[in-house]
Image 1 (tube, rainbow, N blue to C red):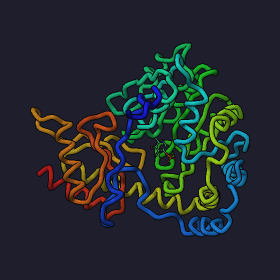
Image 2 (image 1 turned 45 degrees about the vertical axis):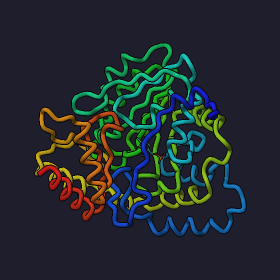
Image 3 (image 1 turned 45 degrees about the horizontal axis):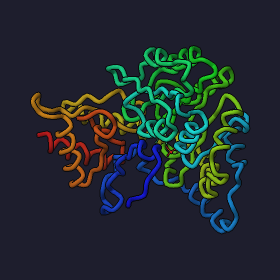
Image 4 (image 1 turned 120 degrees about the vertical axis):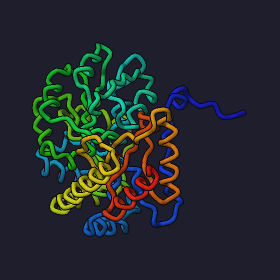
Length: 366
Ligand SMILES: *Cc1c(COP(=O)(O)O)cnc(C)c1O
């Protein structure tokens, strides 16, 4: 007899892990929107400094990190949640807000973790299709808010499509979401967004206690291997709720030390963003030379439909290309797993990796 699992586990989708972890070193890892750059050296030193003290539990209140975030963003520490990666806060938000009969509204295709939220809690997911520019359709999302809605998630810039909405549109949307509905703005890629100042959304918190800005050290800071993210919130209540549903020591000592140190290096972060923008231009130009028009990216990755013959199956063409690129040492993410068969999501790598990807893709399409 096999073990009998819960209904929640039977509902939760299984996301394919990037295949590269067992591969040789010279693989270009462009499948997971990671930074191609190692962590800032001072951050590595800060981690090393705490390792001799790990016989003690980490600070369960994350006080240094929350203090540093509070100073940096001028948000009271009581309104800052920390997580074992920002996904930890996302899943905790689902647990804290949702239950059978409740509804969560989000766009689709969007972040692959959102479907877990409803599956894990028994709530109903309302997926609202993106518009034809691969952007959130905020009007359509508003129309889906009902008395049952507890949570609305807006991913800006959106993963996997790389597109962003201007903050003015998001601000107008916040005004119209009922105040008892939690609006979670997932800003994992905000540092790469050239439409608005990444920190401009913070001003909205003062007027909207139901707003949560979800951010991470996984992307531009290059710390995804340590797992640390945070949420800047419009009220203390959200922080209390996500802490209630989690184990006490959700953020380890190395992650807390790394994130606290990383916040001191905004110049290095700005340089990383600059290099990502150069990669954006290189990739978009290179794709254009192959006759491919990528979505308008405000993130650290490109999103595009592969050119396929009219009678060909886009999902099959995508599968072949992703597999062959993988065999040639270039890992990218297939659109089928992300909700759009025939599309590819390609993270910006180093200049060499980007050139290698373009060369191999050009070769396969020729
Ligand atoms: C990468 C990503 C995150 C960050 O996840 P962590 O758990 O912080 O590593 C959150 N949201 C989106 C949309 C992402 O793409």
